[in-house]
Amino acid sequence: MRKKMSQRRKKEIFWGYVFVLPFIIGFLVFMLGPMIFSIIGSFTDYNLTSKMNFIGLANFKRMFFSDDLFWKSLYNTIYFVIFTVPLTTLMSIFLATILNQKMRGISFFRTIFYLPAILSGVAVYILWMQLLSPSSGLINTFLAWFHIEGPAWLFDPQWTKPALILMKLWSAGGAMLLYLATLQNVPNTLYESAEIDGAGIWKKFKNITLPLITPIIFYDIITSTIGSFQIFQEAYVMTKNGTGGPANSLLFYNLHMWNKAFVAFDMGYAMAMSMVLFVIVLVLTFINLKLAPQWVYYSGGGNK
Image (cartoon, rainbow, N blue to C red; front, side, top):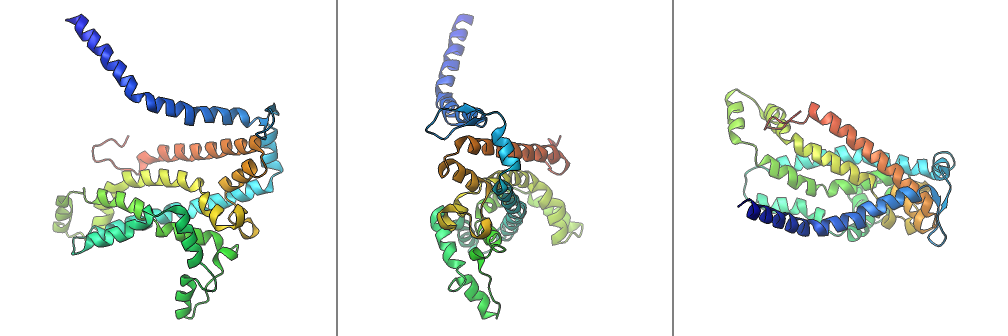
């Protein structure tokens, strides 16, 4: 009997590894392998056509002390992250709260607000380039109705990043769907008890709704922060040949890294930049994970 059980167990383990093998291969080939290659390449002088020449910390020294565009791209990216993450989070929560009401035709409005999240990236960027046109764009035309002179948007260094942040707010429907699903799982009995105690709309939201959706807020902040640090397509498409816009105001970190890798073919330097970005995101994620128990509430009692 034990022998049969042992053979069955071995068979289950074998087929278990067979089913997870595609993931293991994909992880080794497309994630772990390139990561190890980037770590090694960051300490070399490599341009795709020559052999890797080990140069130690020279790439990092040049990055921190000689490349002014490195600091400019890092500033642009941090600026984008600081404003985009909280604003999109608040917008998503606001939309989800409004669309969680029980009223006729609410499904239609949920679909409308979610649509921007599934539209093709490049097509959306071209559309927004038209909307943000200083002379004929719909946004400035709308502002002109109220006798407000619209900014130059993508042609003015002071307004380029706010323009992209505005575009990101327009596509907050993806996170909205997560919040909406979470709100629909909040027990109505909690609201009924609060109403009996005389709680108003704000107190119910503050003391019931907000604590119960903190796990999704935490998840949204983590993923939004990582995604915002990886901004690339918007700046590449919406600036001429990926140059970074006027006065390098849209030269984000990933765009600068792309130009170093595939325009200047300075792959060793680009891989060093990727390692710095990895460390920055890793540290911020670690800080968020450490701070989470202080404000994230789990109804099952797993806060610690």
